[in-house]
Image (cartoon, rainbow, N blue to C red; front, side, top):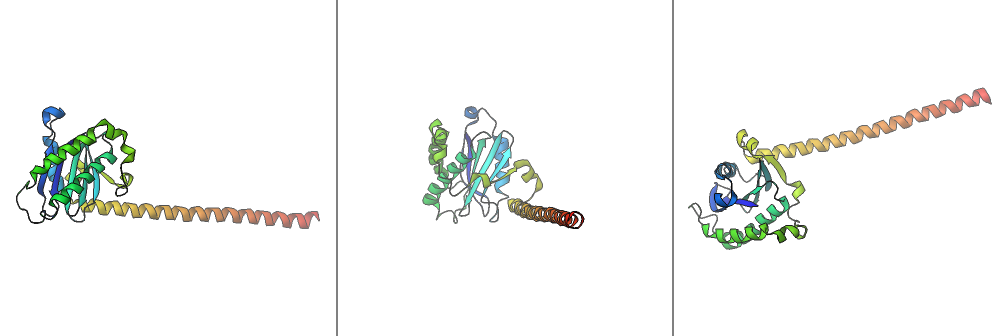
Length: 215
């Protein structure tokens, strides 16, 4: 279930539109998550990962950045990531078409608050059980959910780093992982050659022994 949706300009963290499930409807106090969301989008910049999932206990933040705009959704942890990012992509397509040219020039927070109507309509279509049953038909060419970065919201916020630093560290870890696999392959190859060499030496020794002592 999608409980909170925010659309923010990345350059300065200006909120452009938002939609939130009422506390009475969700049965949860969403204020702490709203605070985390605000802290999160203030850390975004042009070098932040374009798509990311941030775990927040029983909830997950999912966000996608397109054309300098961040589309963020707070969902229950059990809500499928594929569905969450498809939802964000739908919002991006419509929002960009309606307000794309106006985004760079607005200065007032929530200048496009009327977009809430579309958010609510889209959210209902993704909550619908039929949408869950048709999950496999969702086009994910633009975002392989298995490759989307996953981090912990508390760790990100407490570090005081921009998310670009997180992306950089992930890239470094990926490079180290590739180097490790390469080194491991090299060592395995050397080990194989060593075993072959030992076998060859043993075979030659055996042939020489048989030739000189038994013939």
